[in-house]
Length: 405
Image 1: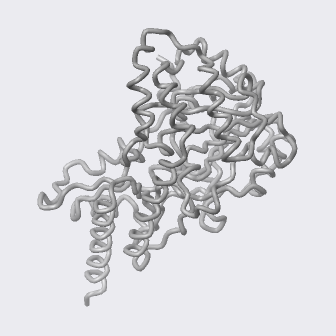
Image 2 (image 1 turned 180 degrees about the horizontal axis):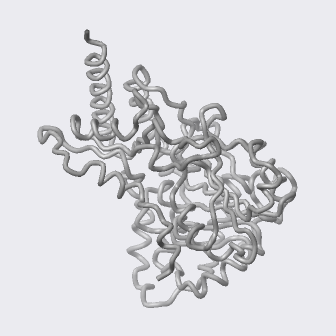
């Protein structure tokens, strides 16, 4: 077997299962999980209808590059959303089976093992970045995302000597788990650093359509390129998905767009990888990328939940004001995220993900995810409010117990 498999750390949900093992939560309370970021809003009906209508196309092999109509629908969407009116549908857009598969596969295709192979990742982070790097024979450089820098990486903390060995930098904006949004100016600076040190900027933008201020959609990496006049999108790729935008995680549909040279090489890799999207799924994807009404309704539902949960938890927990995504990133009273998650499950039958499971010891030696928990506000409003209410009850009961003489 590939010896690099031994370098993989347990997935966060494996660690959570071990943490909860042996606990008997109160049977009188229904279990409410706030752990996995799986949307539970209704999937877009138009996509489901297209999937049904085109089911006969399962009889045909799909091409790696996908249907021209799908690439055109994607390019049209990027023009409406990010003002990119010049994406070449034949050379700068590639449909993929969701961002998770595409991110993993791209690292295998892009990393050059003949020289130092470092991949910079935000810390804490989506664990696929690390796993893909290790299995491609590389090492990760963790860029800490701390409160003092608005939960975004501090680019000034990285020396020119360190940048020299970096081949890929992952940006996650809006961030998982922090919800932080990277501004255009910071994306532009990262592009200049990529030119200076010859690395690829790979932007995971799968939460880009879940934002709280309807007048302030998060900017994208290719939008920053265009503002710099770089319409070849040199060294830059973005990853997008229908999972969160359209509540279609089971469709496994997304796209990669940007630098045509990177797209060409990645497309060649995927031809051998054998992961072309089936034709009915492509038809469903076309319907989803062409419709915005359901996406706006989706944002409205998340805004309602964020407002309700903030009212309940803000008096007892400290967390950054959410900008986008469907996560909250609160600090836990007492600072022990594992102990908090275990107690919350044991006493209130609510599951949350300890923040330390998503991070690694960073430049300062400590784990920037420690002392926080990730709350995925994916359930319906009533269940989400109930979970937040139970969480507050646990905190208030603990504070009373600790302060009683």
